[in-house]
Image 1 (cartoon, rainbow, N blue to C red):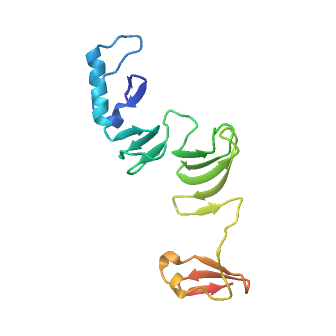
Image 2 (cartoon, one colour):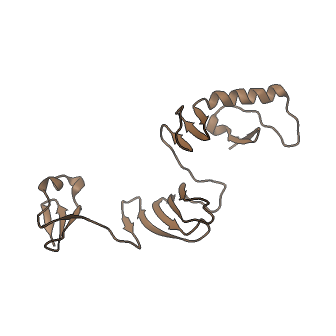
Image 3 (tube, rainbow, N blue to C red):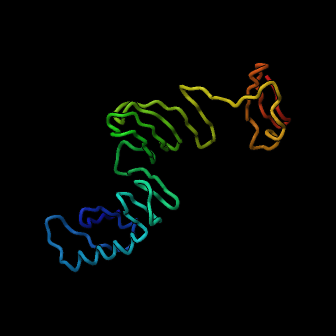
Length: 185
């Protein structure tokens, strides 16, 4: 992938398409070359808005630090030896010294995990494999409750509902939705 330095912004020409001029460090570029690059960059980024310290992509009035109108794809940094899938990190403050939650696609396994800070080992709480296996670790599943009654049949009449569970807190029963309806254990 060819990378091009435009001012202080590093862009991938495969992302924006076309042929931006490559500036070699230590050389001087003609003003016409620089202007042509910025004109080309402006044309290709016309759907990116900066307003009140917020960035909008495909939106003209962003209300958060980053607001996107459309789909987002998070890819692996192919140059990083540490990453094996796209990742989103949520931190309250500086990720180096506050707890963080992560959503990632490590080795083709969707994970939600927590770290005391970005530099410590984490604890997986949820994983989903490509075959559909779901694991919940270090925690419990909290089920919805019913009070002395069998859950309604309308909550267990479609294949997408099979496996659904409810707890009868009065009679200490676990109801499981199956193809033949609610089964109690």
